[in-house]
Length: 222
Image (cartoon, rainbow, N blue to C red; front, side):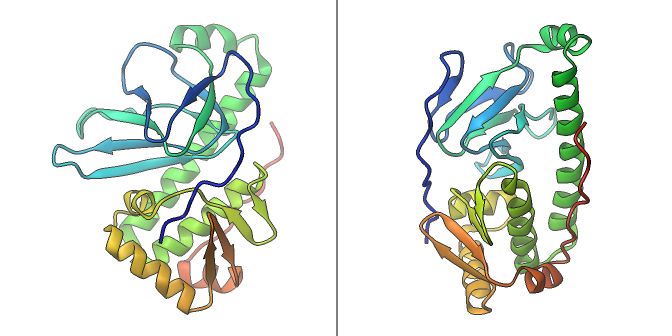
């Protein structure tokens, strides 16, 4: 049971960079652009251990600012394209430092991105540290549903989710087989429907209750 990538990529400005599925966009501590603005597709921060196991640390949806993870001990962190990606490089650290003081729009975007980084980190610690496998999946689906709504990736209770089971497994620290069983259980319980790269939340309130999910408070625009 694979969730396929569905959208048609819009035309892109010439300055944007394009990446294929699985392509590395950036590596931790490497020279080059520090931040990208994700215009199309899904990306992730990831660390791959020496034995091949991978942990996805952060998921990015269109509109997000994204960067490679800053991890020294677990191995080189990467910013990966999970689907086809189009992203705008915003410059290296020196260039960004020079722009923040004069570009109020960029400064506001960086503040918003920092808030979302903190929120995601707290939610991910809760998922991996205390929730069961079924709770983790429900919590993640609700989290992504709320985040993707701002990017036009939802319609009613349905979210466009172009991620494979292997990707979901790497986010939640589960085996692919366990992930498949969890998704099947959520379907049997009448909580979700999976269809052609889309997930429909049939009973979001019940899913939130069983997953210990609390909606993030709405903040005014910076």
